Amino acid sequence: DAGVIQSPRHEVTEMGQEVTLRCKPISGHDYLFWYRQTMMRGLELLIYFNNNVPIDDSGMPEDRFSAKMPNASFSTLKIQPSEPRDSAVYFCASRWGGDNYGYTFGSGTRLTVV
Amino acid sequence: QKEVEQDPGPLSVPEGAIVSLNCTYSNSAFQYFMWYRQYSRKGPELLMYTYSSGNKEDGRFTAQVDKSSKYISLFIRDSQPSDSATYLCAMDTDKLIFGTGTRLQVFP
Image (tube, rainbow over all chains, first blue to last red; front, side, top):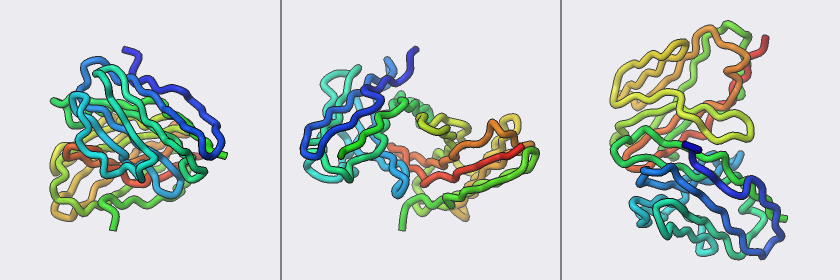
């Protein structure tokens, strides 16, 4: 298995632009998580899905952030409009529902908003 | 107060030293306790996990959980330069909550 695949690896965008981050979870995993990592706040959970349904989006910082999971093999995290304070590394992770510890993380997307 | 507290370090030790990393938590509902290792510009990788209280050993690594004190530890014996990374504790109910991570450097 290729693991959790995220794209792009790096994204540099101007303030006010729309940014879309993509994630392909491991086949067979029914939970998908989006995290954001910064030096100041560490790894923060933004939102997670179970069987493609959003379960908890309480970590989404504001309405500029949205996430979708149209099918079991694809999820997006969108920021519109982007702001410099959104600069961070965004990680996607997935796991199988019968295994509370088997989280697998992608390599992350490093977002820089200038 | 954050749900999971972890000293950010950095921690710098000589090769061969015993390293102790710790976290405290506030949510008594946590049942799974994990340690992740993260190298620079990489995603976190699961190092060890423990269910409920107790100890678990895997090679040079030992994880301990004391639910009565809401305190977990990771010990690294005979530390190596390749152990230099950020170590994150994490705890799970239905979602994984992380500590801020401790940066460890092992020098030759």
